[in-house]
Length: 420
Image (tube, rainbow, N blue to C red; front, side, top):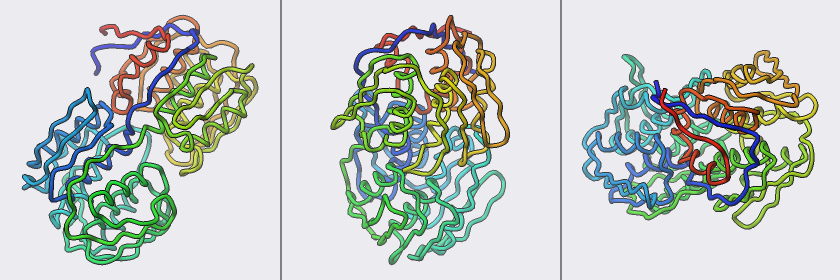
């Protein structure tokens, strides 16, 4: 249990400029990928978040040398000292993306023993497509005792994913990077962080083509060399800040982002009646008039991201009219709306759909964070609400947002910590 709570006094428009941090979803894939290298690597623009620190601890436990300069966002990793291929549950349970160590260690050592991943409780997130991919490459995969074990000499193959899976695509990419021959991933996911991982592998001398499309071709390389690489900006933090600006009817310019990654969200904000202006590496969000209700259905990229569904549905709780939000990726991503009922939201949830009737006012109330993006949604709800909102278990937010309180305070928000 966190020893502090967040207090937010709402109805203050956010104004000014802010800069987005490096991408969480890229960082948690690129850091394990360094295990494929035969030399030290330097990673820049890493976010100073809990998941990055957990991965650093895991690499240290394997025998790597790791230093992380959180001020300059730079991590230096020397994987040459890695002697272990086992990651215990006590480390993997701290984050979901720890499963990427399976693909990386399998490619490096021919064997990987990794504890079941932890992370946010947002419903069943099946691992079957990862296992299918490893088996297609020649690995034998077993499960038991809280561990997933993969072993074998990997060879190129064609992998047909039954559904587009971000985690499965990344994990099999990592395993295939050093497999003998050519691997072809069909029905691959297309998210920006998959493209960034491919670019990083190529910067080390890998051969990955087609990332960003549904067919990725990977020619395994026996040796990968050192690289100095900067990860892309965080797509989800960018979107969260855009939604926060809209929710408070503020005027905020977000620098250091990639506007083309935000097109699905931008389209919905424009439909709501929010002004969104794209620049080369910045986005400005400002009010026009009352917010209109819209319907949202989450989809794989380039569709509306599931990670922005929760912040966006919080915003819709004060939009004029009735909105329908359909979650197609995870089955337990409406817990934040149940918390928002205490704040005066009018919501009805049935299975994978939430019907939201916009209200004129939300009021502050005590609420509890259930997962990372739900935490962001409750922060946005607090920014919109009259009075003071108390947010319990806010530590989950730190898994994916770098210094979000500091950034919001810089934009004028009244947000502070208080001991529980």
